[in-house]
Image (cartoon, rainbow over all chains, first blue to last red; front, side):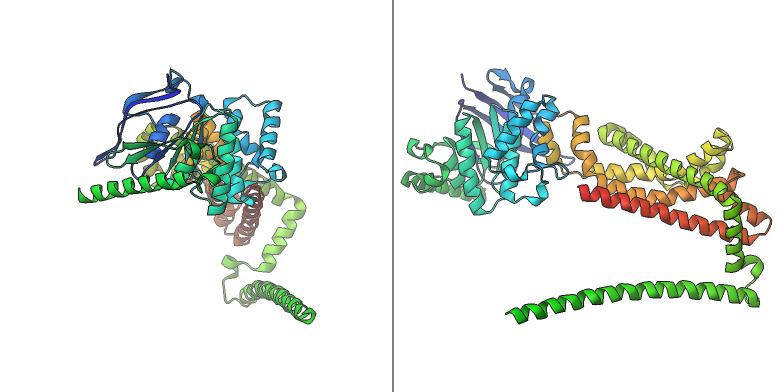
Length: 260
Length: 269
């Protein structure tokens, strides 16, 4: 059995005058310890899908099981990273990372120690008691990563977490996240519109199309590329091949939707 | 190079000096207007150009102020009005924030209450004065209620608006950890709305004075509002102006206190 199973998920958004079908009959499964990406143009429902997996939105139809349990019963297992860090400006970095345990009321001196150690591991030892406004974008996103990992989620959801960063910071953070996730053997789902990022980080890519949101095609990332860090992966020849294939596929999707 | 730096420093010093003299200049003008106003008031009153019975004169007002300061009646009346105003402010503001919380917590509740809030907000609250006084009896309680009710609804509406404008992604972060609605409020919505709440404090300080003075007009036998009405009835406008000056001074002090609080809290954020 798979670690995470998404079974025939459909989702509608209702408004006063209309409704839109954001997701149509999406099914897939994710193995434990693997890294999966949802890639697609804006409006293909990838963020909706992630929010459903996170338990923030209830799908109109379908079900999701995590470790053979219905998702709604164990949503505590999930860590969510957003496009921006969303650190609380009135809390110090250390207090920000401890928000998860605080919400779950599991905070103890050992979690504080663990948070400190993780922050130090991320190179944030000098800003433990600083406020987020005094940190750079990359540092803030690293602090947000510690906040997400501190509750030790078995499934990590990444909603374009690198899209608000400058290119150099983004590449560095990709490497950091990728090695950390491998080290802790986390299962992760990344949502992105960046083809390169999807290939460099994942084991498997689901290409989604819009109106309604569906999985159009899936790509396995070659094993040689998978085992490299994202930065090194970008230099590999098979990376380039896959990039071209996905690029063409995206273009054909676009022209098809233009004709309709 | 060194010389350049020296001349740069000199320029900067000049700039500071100019800023300082600008500020001093402004203060001089403010003092000047004040002094001219007092002199004009005194002389026109003495010469009979304005009716001294109605407009009194700075000399008479300050004599009254001084004698009341010494015999303790200034403090006697002031302390009652101050207490009522501060209490009215606190009751109105806190209950307004509590109502805002309830509106935020339950969408249904706010939808149902919406038309009533609109009507209550449009209603001039001081018009409720007679009813409040009859219901709660003539005394502190009804005057404090007057100070409170005048700011209650508007506080609730403004703060509720601020609660709703908090970035939903903050809530998303908390919800991903399984936070309850109350936890979301405590950890994100409430602290994020601090600046909006402080600015309602500023408005409410002024409103509470209005409510309390009107309340005292209607019912009291002590307090600054009572002095104004009393002075009006016995045609002692020196007393009216004296009370007015004291109110203006302490209203400004309260406003400044809230502003200090604002600076402290905003800095922490």
